[in-house]
Every structure is written in C-alpha cells, then in structure tokens.
Image (cartoon, rainbow, N blue to C red):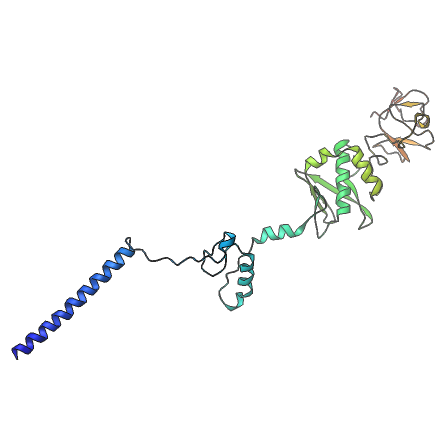
Length: 271
C-alpha cells in the first residue's frame, strides 16, 4: 500500500511540475512578443501598392480609391455604412456655380452667361467713367433670356453682382482693370446689350464717332471730339437728353449747333 501511495504522489507531483513549466514557458513567450504589455494591432494590408495608396481601415479597399467609395456606398444597405463622401457644403457650392469664361462665374440655376457678360460690361463702364449710370438705381444690364433690362447691384472683391430676379454674377477686379475700350466696343458690337454700349450708350467716356471717319466728316464747330456733321442731334453723355448721339467734354470753336455749352464758357459737357 505504501508503494502505491508513493507512486501516486510522485505522479501528482510530476503533473503539477509539468503544468508549472508550461505556464512559465507561455509567459516567457508572451513577454518577449509584447514587452510593454500592449495588445497586437490589426494587420494592415495594401491592395493598391502600385498606386502608392493603402488600406488603413482594413476593409480590403484602398483608402484613396474612388471605386472603393462607390463599392462601400452600393453595399450600405447590407451592413454598417463605410461610405466616404466629400463635405456636402463643398459639393453644393461646386454644383451651383458655372464658369462663363476665364473670369466670369454665375449661379447656374438663376443666371445666364449672356446676362452676366452684360453685367460685366456695365460694371466696367461705371469703373471707367464713374457716374455713367447716375440716373439708374444700379447697373443696367440686358437679359436676352428674359428679353428685358434688369438692374444689378455690385460690390466686394472679387466683385459680386446680384439682380432682383435672383441673378448672381462674380468676377475678379483684375479682369475689370485689364479690360479696355476696344474690348468693350468689340463686345457691344457683337452681342445683345439692350443699347448699353461704350460707343452709343449714355455716359460713355469715349466720344461717339464713326470708325475710320475722316476729318471731313467731323463738325468743324467742335474740337476735342469728332461730332458727325450729319447727326440730327447731340446730347451730353450722362445727361437727360435723348440723343440719338452723345458726346463727352468738347470745345466749342464755332457755332454751338447742338446747344451743348449751356454756360457759354466755350467748353461743352463739362458739368
């Protein structure tokens, strides 16, 4: 009996010693793998190494791959959403504005480029000759789409112009400063401006004259501008006269046929 007991006791001690050695070995392995006691991080897998992007969230798709965003969006109904979208405000802003040219942009839903270009012309005319539209509540600009003249109010830098019908036009001040009388004349001659023109409209700082006119076609009673001697009437630019022709400051050297020099000092349209 004593021999059996000794054998049983020896077996039990052997089992206990083996268990202790196993536990010690496990702790040594774990300690060497994670010396700071931290947990293992999730492996990172790159599925798009050729493009230099990586899958940092472990979903099997490149974080910089638009197709991955589309796939996530398509599968949104089958599980937790992982869809990546651009900020809504930025997307809406980009969608509402349209470029008419290198400088002029409009609110696409309410404004045509033809109207926007006429707003730019009117703004330049007022910039080139302040007060040209002093008899108007704002800047007159013709809308071919609406077939009527509208009024725009502009301010700021970049310039922002708004019309009562919801029209919204913007352009940089540098574009206005780079514009000139030749640009304006060419534009007005080939577009529907509702009569607003630097050559024939009220308030222009450039004398109304026929292109390539010779001195023989100019009225000899005036100097400083070529008044068409065949015109039925001239009025001062920016005044209340009804034309049909207009002129800016000019010297009266003969008979003031058009009654432009109201104060009789020899200089007409100087007020």
